[in-house]
Every structure is written in structure tokens, then in C-alpha cells.
Image (cartoon, rainbow, N blue to C red; front, side, top):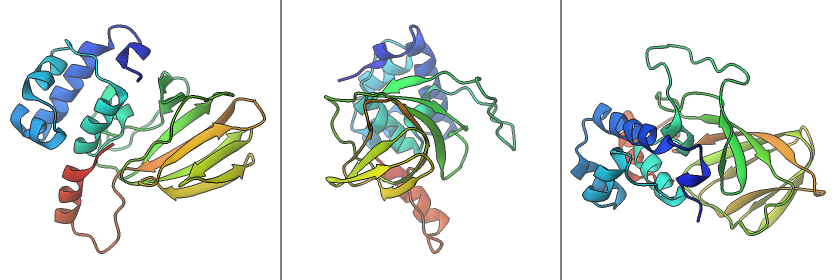
Amino acid sequence: MATIHDYASGIGASLGHRIHSMRESRDWTLDDLAERTGLSKAYLSRLEAGERQPSIQTLGEIAGVFGVSIAALFEHPDESADCVVVRGGSTTARAANGLFFRTLSSTTKPFNIHPIGVTIPADRSGHQTYRHDGEEWLYVTVGRVKVTVNEIEHALETGDAAHYDSRLPHRIDALDGIEARAILVACPIPLTLNQSSDSRELAAGRFVG
């Protein structure tokens, strides 16, 4: 399983600081976070101190209870800005589940959608399907992509899009043995118009990445 070693060196301390800041912004204690994630208080304390290197699965669990994407745990956004502007080339691509992604927005703000630029290597063999709460919309910008949702395969050409329930097992692969690129817009917690803000807060506490 991939770990934080896959990311740039020294990221552990900044990750821990980010988790600590997000927890305190919600007035959660370590006990609160431990209860929500199922992780031990001792582990979370050492993680916030930069002394632990979590797996992708653990990052998903932590991001889930905050109601954000994994990418948000590595951001340092301007929290005071009313409009988030991401300049081309200003973010660094990171690896996860055999894909390379870069965030296209700040997912720490109360936005429902999280746009991500994704590079899909020519070969992703060995990587399994992934599932999490929410929904995803994928738009192919370069190359051809195979989207597999609930064991059903869909071939997408450049300019094609796919929209699916990410609670179903899914994966993304490049076709023709050639690297492909796409824009992925994820909504960790799908909402309907008749859901109240109270329902939204309750759902945020249940989200598992």
C-alpha cells in the first residue's frame, strides 16, 4: 500500500500541521477525531506532530471526516480569499493509487465540488478499484480513457465525459498504452436541494474517503 513516502520528503510535518489546523477549526478534540475516524488518539497525536506516515487509506479516512478530498490535506490556501484562483503551474502533481493529480481549487473552503487535474499513466496494472462516498464527473482532455464502474467498462475519447456514483467500485485507465489526461470533479458528499444544512453537517461526519 502506498504511503506518504510517495510524496515529497518532509511533507509529514506540514501534513500534521494541516490536520491539526483543520481539527481545531471545527473545535474538535483529539478524542473527537479519534472517534470519528476509528484511529487511536495516540496515533493521531503523533501524526499531527509529524511523527507518523499514514497510508492512502488512512488519509482517506481522515479527509472523509473533514468532508474534503485527500488533496486538501496538503494544501496551504489563502483562507481569507472569497474567490480561489489557482495559477497554471502553481501546484505540484502528487501520486495516489497509480494516478498523478494536482488540485485545481482549495477544497478546505465550504465548496461541494473538488476539481482535480489527473494524469493517467499508460500502465496502471496492479491497482485495484476504489470506492468512497459521493460522486465524480470525469472529462477527458488528452488521449483515450477506460472508466470501469461496478465492473462495467466505458471507453471515452478526448472530449467525452462520464458521471458516476463513487460509492460503486470504480477505476480509471489509459487506453492504447498511451498516457491520458482528464479533469476530475469530485463531490465527496452529494446533496439534493431538499437537504437541510443540518443534514449536510451530519453527512460530513459520516463521510469515509
